[in-house]
Length: 180
Image (cartoon, rainbow, N blue to C red; front, top):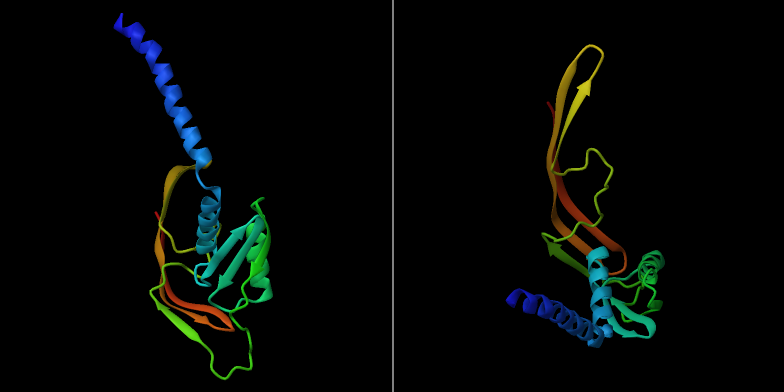
């Protein structure tokens, strides 16, 4: 008798929990979610440029940057945000003046940066990384096994953001590749 009561209550309980999740998700502020999503995307793809979202309105994002961004860099950011169907226009805050005739140029340094300036190449066989592979070969004369190992990493030492010229980074790459 208790098994039948439990089997009747369990679907109702699951339905109630799922309904509460749907209602909670539907009432969450989607603008805060979108603002956090866009900021996370900018931090992930352009970490050194320090691009910040100032305001998010219907189909428009208002951005600012710590460094002076060139037209190609702005286009790349706009193209990335345009992939999201909710953002159609990107407006830039013009607080950072990109004048090349200024005698004093602002340079900021970051020691031991958390992010690499350029993402590592995925298909590069000699990219410093940790990997291991094992293969079994069958030839007309012999059958043998081969193992390949790689140990390596990139270590960022310093990163510089030039006010009007761009970004640079100094780092160390080391790797050991072996075939057994």
